[in-house]
Image (tube, rainbow, N blue to C red; front, side):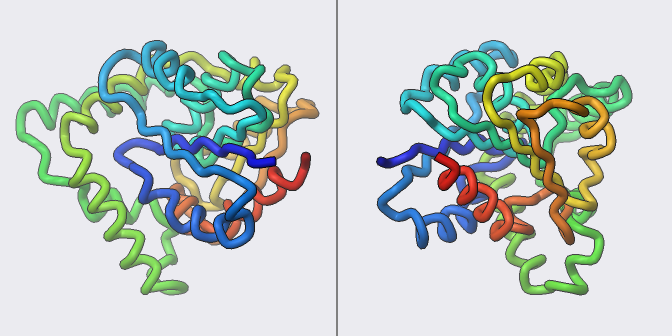
Amino acid sequence: MSRTIYFIPGTMCDKRLWQPTWQLLGEQFLHRCQLTHLPIPTTGNMEDVVEEMARKIVAKDAVLVGFSLGGYIASAIALKIPELISHLVVVSNLPKNLPDAEVKQRKRTITWIANRGYSGIPNKRIEDLLHPNIKQFNAESFINIKDVIVNMDRDLGVNVLLHQLEVSMSRPSLLGRLSHFNLPVKFLVGDVDTLVDISILKDEVSGADNISITKVENTGHMLPLESPKTLALELTKVLLSQ
């Protein structure tokens, strides 16, 4: 029986984020699963975004995968329509409210862009998203990943960036509800992800039998691009679990 995996990207990402993982999954599950990319809507608040995207989940026993901001959205969707979801996979995300300092930083970024414009994602930002030693242990991979990030950012554009910054600021913590969820939840976090504190995640979901956490070695925040083999392997486990 064919299974559907819905993939939700993060801030300034599109389906190119998933291509390496899709290629690996396709080699093994070409006729056994359908891989569907769900772009984040470009209007509305978080509640509107979740509502609109939840309506697009039509397959039963679906696997829901979300990266970064998409990890929060995927968590909210799974809690909204659990009857359609068999597994939730959250990648590079801590689905809870943002710290006040991060909210202030995002507001400053929005003001900066409004006053000075936007010329694309800075090189320093790209390097901060990746493992600090990626140039040393895989220079070719770094170049390819950087190109993907730059091209996704360029093609989506400043209006999408502004909306995603705004929509992501006001969001309640979902960890408590996920800890009491009836469905299995898998977290994948890079070992050097500067945006996700895995110790906080472990503390907040401690004792939850439905939640598993995997720390991915030699990986920063951009896990689907840095470690697609690991992501594909974890999704393979999910697909073979039923």
